[in-house]
Amino acid sequence: MRNKALNILLFCLVLALATAAAVLFSSGCEHAGGHLTTTTTTTTTTGTGTTTSSTGTTTTVTFSTTTTIVSVGGKTFTIQNVDYTGARIGNIYTSAVIDRNDNNRIHISYFHRINEDLRYAVGRPGSWEIYAIDSSGDVGLYTSIALDSSNNVYISYYAPRDSALALISQEGGTWGTFYVDDPLSGEDVGYYSSMAIDGSGKAHICYYDWDNTDLKYATNQSGAWTTEIVDGTGVGVHMGKYCSLAVDSANKVHISFYNETGNTLRYAYGESGSWAKENIETLVNVGEYSSIVTDASNVAHISYYDRGNGHLRYASGNLGLFSRKIVDASADVGQFNSIALDSSGEPHISYYDVTNSSLKYASLSGGVWTPLTIDSATNVGQDTSLAFGTNDKARISYYDVGNNLLKVTFEE
Image (cartoon, rainbow, N blue to C red; front, side, top):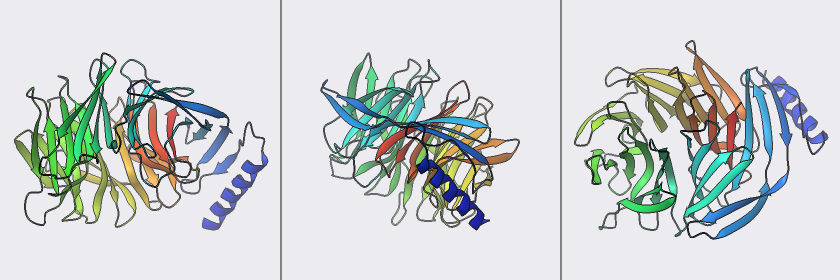
């Protein structure tokens, strides 16, 4: 089967190179991992991306504005390049959310590697506005974006320049930056930030304290910003990497994160000053790249990476009552995953296929997970962020490492 899959992939590659430039290829190829027919049509043009800084300065950069249509597993996806992020090694930490008033409009935060600034893109395929919203230098890692009920944008991020956790928000068209946690002692905080806005418009952020190896939490729920340690106090205890946060309908906070000391997935539930915590995996060497959401019944759904076996895994439940399943065990898969729920409460996960350097997407229906390969260009699919609008169509932002591009896929 491996030889057959390899021959098919080689055939598709030769066919792609031989076809015209306007439409590079349109063919039926058996998907090596899932035995699914994939039809791909690619149109490449050279366009310009215009970036506007927070001070109003405009910069124009030329890059490929490739648009690709992929049909696989009964679904069709439009893939488009959004911004050139700079030819430097490292991640761009994308985070995406759907506009509250337009299912085809997506908001994305990310890090621009060359300029070392925080960027924000908003738009839809073929129409993008790009802004450098914090261009003060050496800022913008580990971004997390959220919208309040009025469609105002909030982004939490790590600012290495000041070793601090920062928050930038847009209200009335004006961006304002605030340092949520900036220790005077010179300690380094703000890694792996994950943010949610509750029904009252208050922000909740989890993040990692690098120096003290603690999971921390910040909120302005009381009206003033407060920060606290959720887990990890104690000599030699490392808690909080790969943290992800969700707020349920009762304004209770759910956090998934990596227990590095025990090498497993951990979970915290509660509110400021009151936390219940537990390891929710029975395996070890699992729990990196966790992503969490809650459903209408306040049940938590978590996707995460099983490094020991190279699998993507999924857990759902509440404190003390989690069930766990394998989503994809086809290869070394599951890093950079992101989970979201559709309107029926069914989970969907975007993630990186390490073995094939591709973007994958899995959906749960009728108790069965169906993994699909969406983008198999050269080394794509890191830093995924998945979001759903009210139309139950997936939108995924991710990093094209091979071409240094921010990309987005829209399910049609």
